[in-house]
Image 1 (cartoon, rainbow, N blue to C red):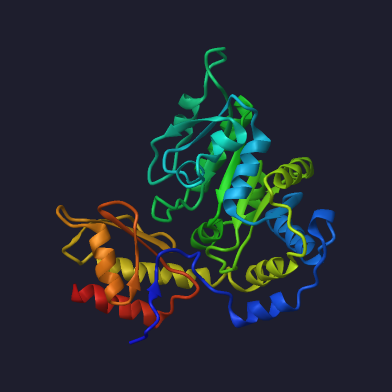
Image 2: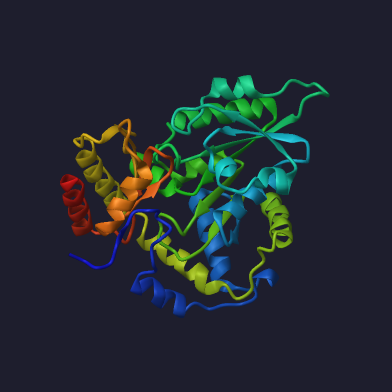
Length: 341
């Protein structure tokens, strides 16, 4: 048995592969605030072209790319419409209020996904007493929804509504790579549907740090100014961008392996008597709820004693995330541990 814990807490815990480290060490660098880092420029151009969008801005984190997008799309007093479990609301430190001065309209969706009719009902009337509905933000895949994916037809329907009502549409696509692989979708469809897209490199793609914000040239020009104000202007960060370039070439197709590993764990958990509910497993995230009287933190502690790290996301729910550093043998070892409980 390996002495190193099998870490399912998040796909952010991965470490760069040897080949990625070689690419990082060899990367040409320059001052990115002056637009002179060739590796960052290449990464931004490559990612924008992948989605068929005009430009991109490299940032330290997905929280920053989301918050820049919201700031770009809104004015203080405007309103952002999103699902109640969205990362932009739950996990970004109240940034919508702090950074953009905007309010939030929360919708109760299906595992993090919202429907067109819900958005239509949420749009504020033209009334001086109300905030102005300005932006709709979708998250695909949905973190708190167990890595579930939108049906792209629903996204297109929401986009049509936004166009009719004059709202912008943003995608928190931290794990959009997983959705595209799982549902065999087209990057260009995303680029032609959303006004802005945030994609993360340090989750499912296994990079040490970094996210990109995509949009048209005018939007990204504005985003770069806000990035500077937020303290996100980096200098010789090309070695980080090189990790992203390597990941785009080598770490997307392999996501199906993570999805397979998640399904294997899900098949095991469905048979356990202590599991009350397992959310449908679509990508690399599993969320399961325990039976009455069971404690998620207590189970996480028990698993840790046996060499498995899990995340208790509530008193009764556990999250497991498969990723680049989880091998097939790790999966079988974890299944054996669950079967012994």
